[in-house]
Length: 635
Image (cartoon, rainbow, N blue to C red; front, side):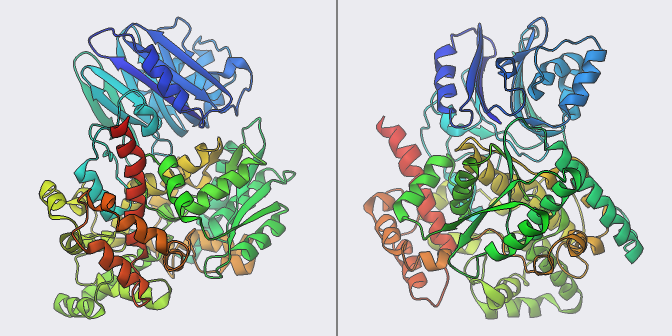
């Protein structure tokens, strides 16, 4: 795990060393162990190292092919580096280290741009081809590691984080379109950035820059589902269950390559529990620390279930209770860590969990990624049930029910069975594609028209955030497959993976996700719908969990890594929320209509409605602007 940055002048040869040096220094938290730079006329690379494989100085980057014609920096881990190294040695390539990243410049020298297709792992990387004078940037298939870039004149600048990029290219203005997208989705989706001029390289993509052009192209697309849907018999389920156990074991085994202490993130759910079970399968003598965050709210607390799983597999429980946050500190920490506005409130416990783990480990295995390929969310089940209702209930009747439950977009209906029903029913009048987003978005079109400032609406009149989000998804007539595609291609890389990358790298911690191994993602895509979402969510992993995990864990309901946000905003966050959102400083940004902030605060404080998700987005957006826009303007 590392931080990378650099600059490439397409047609000129400016001295870029000082600016790249500033970006490199800004990434020190991602790589506290070492640093390195490469400079040549009109090009430069910077690197900060978190040493995990080959701890010697030879493992430091940048790495180069033998003649120095190809130079590369890599953030992440190349899981198949040992196999690639042997293959490249057979072709006459020589290496000076056993570091996983050193295979990259050699592989590019052999294969050109197709080198990236041979890489298995999580990565964001940059390759300078000095002879052909070109820059290649690439991200892994699912976007586990980040890369942000911008073009100024003929210079392409890039970095692992926008905060580092801004050390060379000051932030300037917030992008109105990005503000609307953020208020819709709770994140700024790639390739957009909240800052004008910045762009995020999408997952599974290459950027190639040379004297003629800068182009971005996809090098990976997700595997297509079966057509027809295929056998879903009990015999097939039993066979798939054993194959999944073997595949997860192999994914864990590959991710044990480390020369530093290793641990496990452990919740009370089945995804991290199955990772721990697979760890016992492939490394029975390993007794890792298992890190868990607890809450003083029983609806969110998973300590008891996590302890049962840890005991089953001989892991050492390491538990910390998350208190109600200090309002100012929590918001300012999120703004400092996430250099884009990031509205997922589970960032709060994730930051605490990463700090807890870093005391004992440098690498951790995570259960992230078990839900998106295998239909693990209630909204996946809802998509199937709603499709059945479509066949028996006419749309006017469904629309009548939706209007009867009132304003019930994601976040307003509260938790529990009643809230879930309201969110479900509130989307029945929509077509299936719109439903995919209705259960995951916040300020939807009617709420944007009602609550956002007229100036912001005018500046973004042609923007259709929902249509943008659905564009590019694989064509399918199945609501379930569409929802799975959205989660894999949008929600996972724009939200969950960003959350974990920033929180972990803020403390120099490497997080590895076995569930997102390409072989497992491809396996899930081939499953018939009944083995994804037959009798409930996540049919196949739950069947495996029933064999391996404590019964209370295997049969438990999905909780997610949430926080009691509604209670916080009626308690420890209430006064701070009013202070910030009713301040002249916030109103001057002209993001909310006059009186909208006060209305949302009052409606939530009444206790009759839950607007906590919306208020949190506004607070995060304000904290981000104070740190990254106001500070830049003042400097």
